[in-house]
Each structure stands twice: as structure tokens, then as C-alpha cells.
Image (cartoon, rainbow, N blue to C red; front, side, top):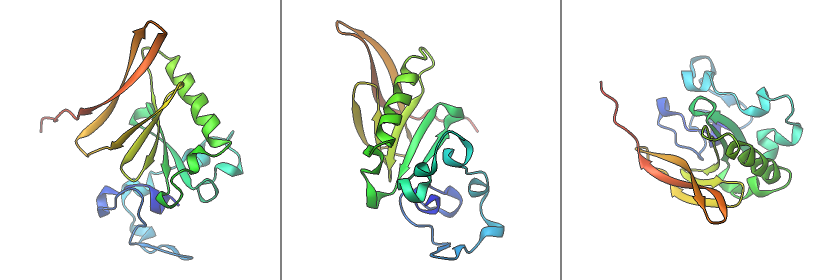
Length: 164
């Protein structure tokens, strides 16, 4: 499943499509020479002992990954099962993790479902479809005080160019 849902820049493979080096029933045809991003990729199901067998990517139809130095928890969803992340027990857990993230002010982390390049940000009180996230964009979370209390707003921002 990871060979489908995860992007691999080294071989120009986007999220949500099978890697051309993945052969059904035989796994990766370049396994011994696979790119470093493949070598270092581990889904949370492999790392987090509290996630049961229902979280195995082939069963869940998504791989749960942490990126951005642990500041982003993403369900990389199989586009053929685009609502898999909304099923129980996944959705309830994603909502709970979003609520825990919101309580970590000011160090909020992002919880989202990524279906191809389309991101749906999961917040404690709502889900926000951010649409396609371009390569030069990032998602930003910002706490806002409102009459109803504190809410988290999400927006797309341009990635800052790095000096070379």
C-alpha cells in the first residue's frame, strides 16, 4: 500500500498511484537499489505499538505517517478508497488526535487526510477540504479567539524560497 499512497520524489512518483517499480505479488523490483526516501519510510502502524491490526495499511486503505519533524500526522489515503479514513475506528482516532493537537497551543500540529494531492485538514470541530496542495504551498494552522471561544483556522501559504 505504501508503494501506492506515498510520493517518491527520486522516481517522480506522486501520491496515490502505484510505483512503476512495484509488481503485484512480487513487491519492489528495485528493492536493493530503492531510493533513500523509500528506505527511510515507516508508517505509524509499524512504529506505534498501540495501533492494532486494523491500522495495517492494506486493511485500512491508508498509511498513517508523521512528517514535518512530527508536526504533521497524515493519513495517505488510497484514492480508490477515498473515504476509508472516515470509517470507524479511524475517524474517531483522527478527531481525538486533532483535539490533542489543538490543546498544545502554541505548538499545534496538523492532522490531515491526503488523497493524492488533495488535503482535508481534520480539526476538533470540523474537517476543512483544502483542495489540491501545490508543491510550493504549505498548510498553516492558526488559533483565533472568537465569541464562541478559541477556534483553529487553516490556510494555504506559499512555501518560503530557500537560499542556495
